Length: 186
Image (cartoon, rainbow, N blue to C red; front, side):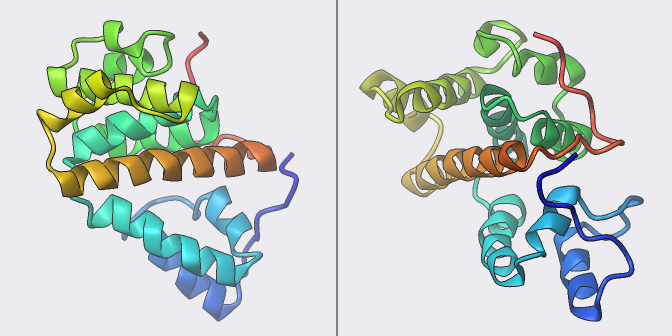
C-alpha cells in the first residue's frame, strides 16, 4: 500500500486536465499512480511536469538511448514501478526488446545483451554515476564519441531525473502498475 494514496476519480476539473496532459493521448488506462500522487501537491507536480515532459518529448537523445538509460537507472535504483512502466510502453516503442530490457536488471548489463558500442557506453556511464556520482575520464570519452555537448548535458540530467523519480516511487512504496512489465528476479 502506498504511503500517500493516489488521487482517485472523480477528479476536479483542474486535476483531470493536468492528468490528461501527463498521459499520452489514447492511453487505455488510468493515469499513473505516481502522477496521481504528485497531484496531491499540484504546484510541485506542475514544476516536475516541465522537466519530465521535456526529457521524454523534446529531448535531443534518440528514444532508444533515452530508454536504455531509464531502464538501467531504474533497475540500479531497484525501482520496479518505474522500470515496469517504461518497459511496457516507451522502451518497446523505442525498439528495445525483452532480452535488452532484462539485461538492464543484471549486475553487468553491458554483458547481458547484444548492445551497440553507444549503448554499452551509456550503461557503463549510468553504473559509474550510480556507484560514485562521478564519471571517469574513460567513461566520458566513450560517451563523447557518440554525443555532442548538448546531448551529454541532457544525458546527465536524464540520469539524475530518473534517479529522483526512482527515489520518489520507492519512498512512496508505489505498487507496480497492473499493466506494467514485471521486474525480473535477479
